[in-house]
Image (cartoon, rainbow, N blue to C red; front, side):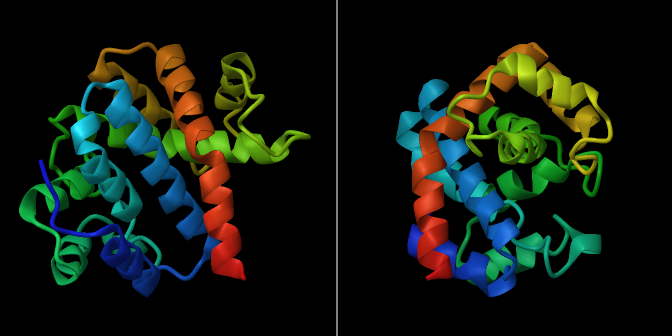
Length: 196
């Protein structure tokens, strides 16, 4: 898997269709997390591809929420993305918006961690540190069980994602926390630059 898309082009495309700081924060977080997972899963040579798919996975969500993962191919083609990249982005909407099943390990991970990074991010903002650096799986599990907390983050998708990967929910949570720790400082820095 390779991408002809540069990060600069990907970031430009993201900002063209996403103006909400929250959506940009989510995109940068998923990008960083996916890069960590590429290394963790033995796909280090594909880390750029995994990261950029993470960066652009919600390219159409802000402007076209009703057509999420349906409008994406058009926007991604315009940005210069190839077919395997477009497929990888679109299959994270499997069973919700599209019927493209995640098959590659990267696609399964994106499906599983997209919602989970949202939940972890919301839980981190509630902590005195406002950080994932001191977050433990046990406290995340409490938030996961409280259906009212970050209600927009689908618990079913997270559980289905873990099952598809053959991981326990705890394993997925632990890895996702580590992935977010790996990129927290750089994401915060990039957000500060955007707001400057």
